[in-house]
Image (cartoon, rainbow, N blue to C red):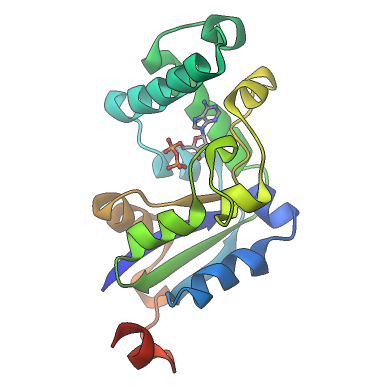
Length: 192
Ligand code: ADP
């Protein structure tokens, strides 16, 4: 069994999508083992997203790729073509946005929980997220629009990307005693 961390960002809370999002994970057979509403500080968000050059560069490279796909010049929107610098800009926007209102923090447990939650969440860019996913069904943002407005992409939700991230994020947002052990009534059917 795996545990993964998920956060409904301020846009998901403000659009009234909390119940809808939770029910999608529940109906897939994942077990909710931790849940709370938090208004994060900028510092909490800073700790949540990595500050390593490698993570910032990956975020920047993904941004550069989407600009190339859209045939747009990143320098016009972001003032630079350096992946690292773009990553730093995006992280600053994330710190401002996620600390701007309450969010819902959750820990989900289940078979391949990390991969299954990411599958239900969909692609980072709503414009590329498949219908049927949370981001594909409820968002339509794109990097060019977001960056023109100097804000992060409104994609409703964060979910841990791998087991190392999940371990780190669960410990950052939850105390051990805030995570619960219980049995779902349908567990034997879902898990065999
Ligand atoms: P994910 O949230 O799918 O794991 P990343 O870790 O790559 O995606 O990025 C973290 C968050 O940064 C994204 O969810 C999104 O809100 C924001 N973001 C990523 N790329 C951009 C971008 N080019 N412009 C604005 N915001 C972005």
